[in-house]
Image (cartoon, rainbow, N blue to C red; front, side):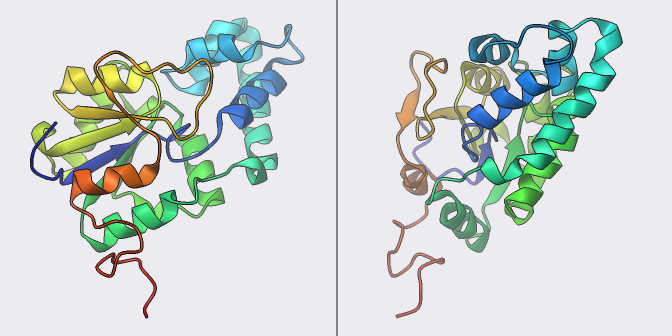
Length: 226
């Protein structure tokens, strides 16, 4: 791990910034319902990496994909109130912004649902750049989207830290020459940390890695005034 604080922080979205696995699995089942037996959580999770349109292409015949994608987006929009954020995540992102740290979002989600999720949770402000799954030349675990994001953030791989909750995130970071940690605060049984990666159980464990004071400390930029 870099002995100096990282100056660029890259987050995955689902299972990292947002507690959304159940929301996403149920959305795919709703999308597929008229066309096939509902896919299991494990089946959907195993297809993660590319955007939803590509995932639906692996689950359904070509003639059903457009209608299924429309159903998926309908479910996302209708049930966005189910989404949750760890209580420490919003203050952490606020502290990063106040400290002029460059934060980016690298997600396998397509741009449509990424915008929907960020808007529903009022998190648009938190990220200086976003690369969604349908904006990368190759999906995770390829490093293409991460390298594009670093270019947009003006950051070098050696000064960046990626935070994700899947082996796809960690593999993409390694391929890009970026340090990575595993987000363990929204655990799901199907997501297992790869070997030789630090597992963080709380978002505030990121603070010392990027040079931020502990949450609530007197010099925490998001701490309430005395």
